[in-house]
Image (tube, rainbow, N blue to C red; front, side):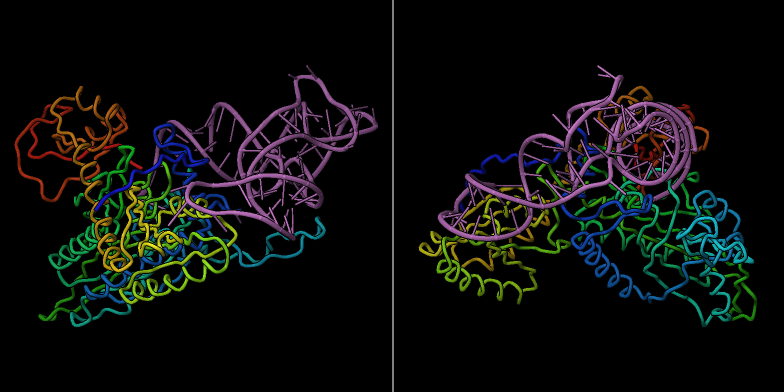
Length: 501
RNA sequence: CGGGGUGUAGCGUAGCCCGGUUAUCGCGCCACGUUUGGGACGUGGAGGCCGCAGGUUCGAAUCCUGCCACCCCGACCA
């Protein structure tokens, strides 16, 4: 097996990561045709190619949720204000970023021909909050569904959109409206609810690592980073190429907070009235942002095969109809065989672009494998196969194409994950002094593993001085006595700090 | 929401300070022809209420006011 030397190609019009990472990201999202800004402030249009990635994520996650016993349902977009405010901490946490519906009708504006205005007579008795998350409406509903221990556990997920009126938005990473799934479960015991919250964190981690090829740290949030209304927040934290951390998914143990706020009780086997225990967990279209920032390069998007809408693209190289026909005949066989193996293949026989333009386009869009086939290949019984992750090219016998490609897709998936793990390992630094801490956060980036005294004061002070926050207290942390990197007070374990998205 | 910046054709831009012919250039787009192993070439063509709304002026892309959107830096956050 001989790799051909890859000619250096300047990717046109895409800012280099090292010049301006943020600009690179924004340009890539638009140029790769994933999404664009809309006429609505902070809200994006997810374009077909970007949505196809979301659909692949959804399909896999949905399968995993169902395998772990969950069912899908759907709850309303609007939450009456009185319900929204029932769980105080939750309400307070989200209050500042809620869109609120106050009227239900428009009318012609008498002072402004051809324009509409809100009909002042159509004011709602009670304002409706556009859900920033659905605990309130769901727990109000669960009240009617749960009477006995026999009704438990209740394991529900919904795929939905939510709205959080963010000050600063970025495509996929933080938009005012985003798509997500939110699981909401009710359990008879604390132990069972905790187990559920951790199980879903595990599901998220497996999805991130096995499908997105994005390594994550499983951990618990510090008190100040916890979800509003949760007793414990479990998180998966990923590290992006610019050294910043991304909270990629969270799973909350809600204790009995919502059960108490909405008076959800069940009768136990012993005939006693008990409040139920709750969890909620979610991942969003933010995952697409994480996917982009984990693997992509200066040539464009790099997609892991398991989530790529197109896994293999075939580009014919030909002169005249006759050659195209001969090539198409061969290609049809490959397409059929690859599809029978579950590989998604696109044969790009457009006559309106030359091969070079197509190569560049599919590199920008991150298609994992490209096959080129021309007259020369027909004569030699070969094809040229290029992999997106390393940009290497190789000539392969036509007899081996299917086997080679399926193997290559696995290789790419694995290689992307290994590369990301290597990056994270290299950018995880153990520090014992605050000078070192500041230096690493400032200059090297990535995760910093340091002792922390467990107080909010220290956490806040560190954030203020370095902009780094506690990303999580890793679950597999070893107990190791030490001194807090900031206060010098006694600490029993290290936690992970980083600047984050 | 505070500070800074930017909005001119689908995209990227010149012109704006100092108001005055038909708003510049490149890419892209359309037609025809020649091309096709890494972003083709020629010829011809289309496309603009200069972000939106007011104002000043004989005259506004240019000056003034308000609004909207986007980008960067803070605060907030999945």
